[in-house]
Length: 162
Image (cartoon, rainbow, N blue to C red; front, top):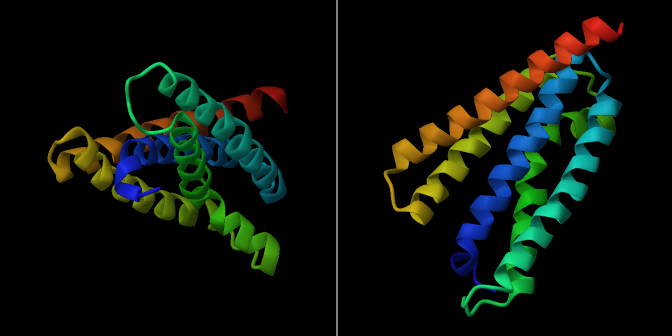
């Protein structure tokens, strides 16, 4: 399995994995949830949504005339979803494993995630044959909007429920 042959699946899985996991992190930060809850919700999202995305990729691949095996396309989607989608959770895991207790967790997670978005945007430019700057900017904006919405929904609901 060569990386270049599955670049589209990598971008598809990595983008969705990073956006959805960062939305979980942002929503939890907006609601003031504990780091352990962020880890639980983040990992639940990574594996359930990653599996769902990979199944969707597999099923759609069964009906194309693409010579690449559907299983490998689904696997590439899943692996990129989980590995790149893990980035927003890294600082929370670091805190949990090494008891760092950094109060700037969300800020650090945001920086790491936006770096991931920039890298995904770079590879996305190669898939959609557009300018790197444009693709990176679009990807960063998409991530920022999703995170902002999730943060304020979490903040709003926390105020209503509490």
